Image 1: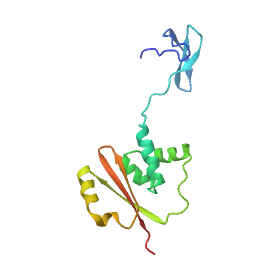
Image 2 (image 1 turned 180 degrees about the horizontal axis):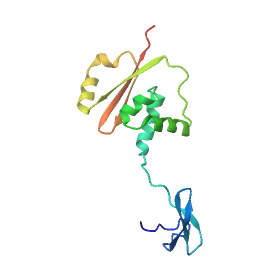
Image 3 (image 1 turned 135 degrees about the vertical axis):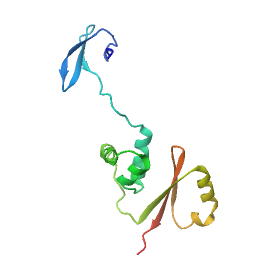
Image 4 (image 1 turned 45 degrees about the vertical axis):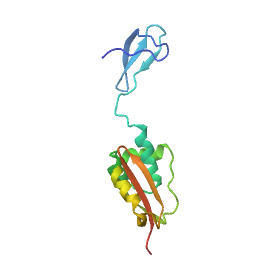
Length: 139
C-alpha cells in the first residue's frame, strides 16, 4: 500500500501513527497533522440514488425498486431516511410499471388506447425505459 497524501498540506511525507477504530492513522511530517484514510468501499452511482428516490415517490415499494435497479432495498430505505423523503399522504392511484426497450416503447406509444385513462411517466434506466402508469383502485 502506498502512503497517502496529507489532506491539509498535500505533502507525501507521511508516517504511520497507530490505529484508531480499526483504521490506520497517519501523521504528516511536514505539518504534524494526524488523519485517517477514507474507507474504501463500494460506492453507488448517484444516478441510481436519484432513480431510487424518484421511484419511491411514485409509490413503488422498496423491494420492487430493488428488483428494478439491482440496489439493496436496505440502501433505498437508508437514502429515504437520509434525504428525509416523505411519501404522499394518500394513494388513490396504484402505479404499475413496465421496463421496455426503445423499439417496444415506440410500439407502445403508437397504440392510442394505451395513452387514455390514466397518468403516465417514462424514465430512462440505463439502455432501457421504464413506463410507470397510474390506474385508480377499483372499488
